[in-house]
Length: 317
Image (cartoon, rainbow, N blue to C red; front, side, top):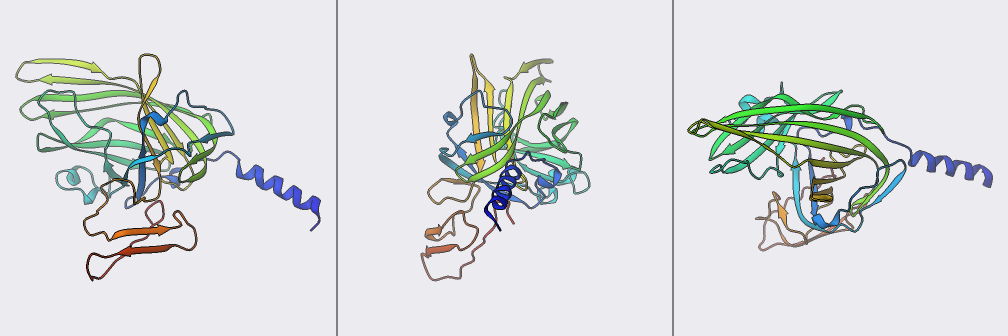
């Protein structure tokens, strides 16, 4: 092979590797998948986020402060009554809602929140949810689903949806929410995180919501508009979930980051949530991590015992 031929081949490879990608439902999660997510300090995000073609987004300096498993469970693995309303016929999977921490109703205690999704070749939409309010489990359908993605996802696509739900709260009244989501695929390029580099599409979602509350005992109800929310999600082929997601709300003069999460490897020096530690060995080390070839595992047991080691890829396989 002569030198000129080699140069042409390298140029072609470079153009292919940095070409725009397309996201389809094959790049979304399946029931049984689990992904390690790292949460970073909210002050790590800067706005406005550059959105254009052939961009390099460098978030390699993000420092993880917390790690968790994002699990996509079959609806049949949930306890009753959630698995009675959501089943394998009408639901693809459910997951914990870590973002919802409260409902704007006095004397209401929210202890658990789940989201339930239906995936098809044309869309991924949230069809329902489940709350445990004042120790009472309350599953419910959306009267209008929240369409997170329409497939295929390509650069410069736009779409929108109106979603709504409502549920009675025993001995209190009614709580509901309606919202409007606008998705804009406004960037493509190379995303760099502490975990690696990914050819990505940037999906920017603007979400406006209004809560409705009605108290039976007072025969009184009112609406509470919530602050406009934004989701910046970088999607890559085969990654099942956003490689990086930054959630933000509108502040007085600019956007304020409320949550930053990215796909990562399991790190021993970072606090974990939802990752069992009670029977883990001490001084557990894996290196190099991440790796695509040889992996060395070192650990010390508290006492002689049988040991099981589970190794998965970044999408839980």
